[in-house]
Image (cartoon, rainbow, N blue to C red):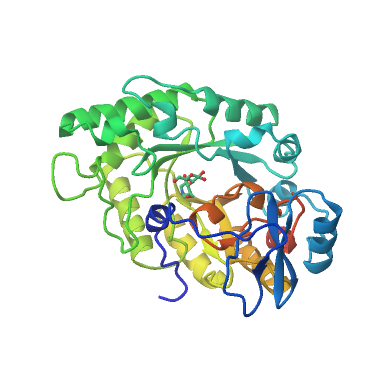
Length: 403
Ligand code: 9MR
């Protein structure tokens, strides 16, 4: 179906090493007939000049690049604050952002991240994942996760735990250990229980399970879904949820996935999973709808609302957990305008559904977005640009919570 994102993130990640050539500083990086590279060498940024020419200009605050960029591309104009508006006019718990430890040495970035009128919730992008927290069996390292949680607490921000069990960024010792089914169950129990206990009382919600389904709605095959057999099954999810509930009874327990924004096989599979967990009395409080979307290909507001309501009707809350809306670079005024519309569509759909508790963007600035590193030639997916200046997308978010 045309409105759904066909690209599998897993497939995209697999393509990562195939980096394409980049344009040099001052070189061309876009334009209507341009077929060369659309990304620039480190230290320069592809800046739209006119429909026929985009150029790699030095990144940062150089007068040339910022003067050209601000003259050529529209920026955001709203003076309202995203988290304040999400709560007061949107009726939501928060507007939030993901972050990651390496970025926390950037003082300008941290100052904005810590402004709780802008962000009322923080998700650590990597530092609570299995490879970061239990790199060897029974050896837990919480330092980087603690750094993010301390920062959020200091700034009065809610924290989303991410994630107990995921097929990706799993420690090598788990995947290559040839463990039998009962040992795998015990490994998973220990991991979730230790992780969730460590931050017990500090976390609003946990993405206990991340990305359990393939895009066609079949169960994703990996070490835990295959435990003890050759046909992937969802039994490991119960193990993880039960362990998480016991470790922190107050945390909301979520399952999180992408490409479940509107109706389709994957969304149906997730709803069936919720039904079966509920029927079995397994703890499940929420579904995280990641929202890694593409400019101009976002489902309609009506389609989003219908799908969100299909989840909330099952007795779970939902949250938009990893929103970003990417485009093929370079940015143009038209793409920025469409992106404003697209952000507005998602945020206003969440506003319209009572059980949608909040919206989190997957980092707030293009400077630290995961997108260009995975989807070659694409990016500019976030509401703040490389220089931490708001784009029209920000206005779309504010309007989405307001109207
Ligand atoms: O933002 C994360 C990036 O830094 C990592 O390299 C990547 C590795 O897979 O994971 C990114 O975050 C992912 C999240 O954990 C789950 N949903 C998709 C996100 C983007 O890939």
